[in-house]
Amino acid sequence: MKGEGAGDRRPLASRNTRWAQALARRMTALSVTPNQISQASMAMAALAGGCFWLSGSGGVGMRVLLLILSALFCQLRLLCNLLDGMVAVEGGKGEADGPFWNEFPDRIADILILAGIGYGIAAPGLGWAAAAFAVLTAYVRELGRATGNPSDFSGPMAKQHRMAVVTAAALLSVVEALWSGGIWVLTVALWVVAIGSAVTVLRRGRNLIGHLKAKG
Image 1 (cartoon, rainbow, N blue to C red):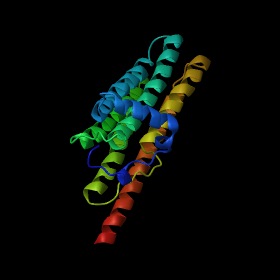
Image 2: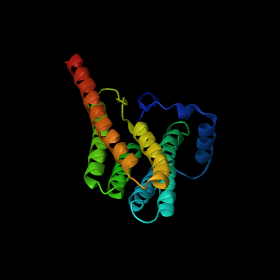
Image 3: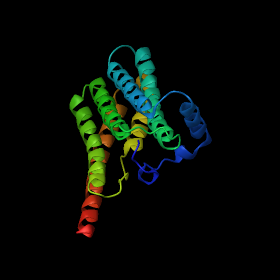
């Protein structure tokens, strides 16, 4: 994350918690780089997406296990996202190619997880639509930075919101699997992410246009 000031970081309350700071200090003391942590987030996302995909087949017991693992890997992805920045900025271990590894893995992760859900519920088009809108939210934010404006992390469906929806849906789907064996919870979750991300794109786009006009 070298080159990114603390004022241009996503505001996260968890960054100020004692457990996060202690874990970041521990990671900083090790020979682990921020870029490696960012790369690990892609692995967590791949595991989450794979579990979501595989949860669409097999018996109830296996589906329950895969859904629990999906929720776990989604949260581990977020943990990696938290720690890479803390190790880079607070730990002073930022690297020259940090900006690439700060952004690129997040986009891959969105695609892997959301498309994985789509294939798991036999609705790949919906999964890819949610993934496309999720990537667009980041595109508009980075377009703002490229034009000299502050990063817009507004929602209603920023990265942390998407992962919260997906994690909650995975855990609720465990109950659904045991109760009825349906796929409604994950289907609704994908619609929420897709529509929420589209609204986020429009909101950020409107904000950016306003900034650009104000400068002009």
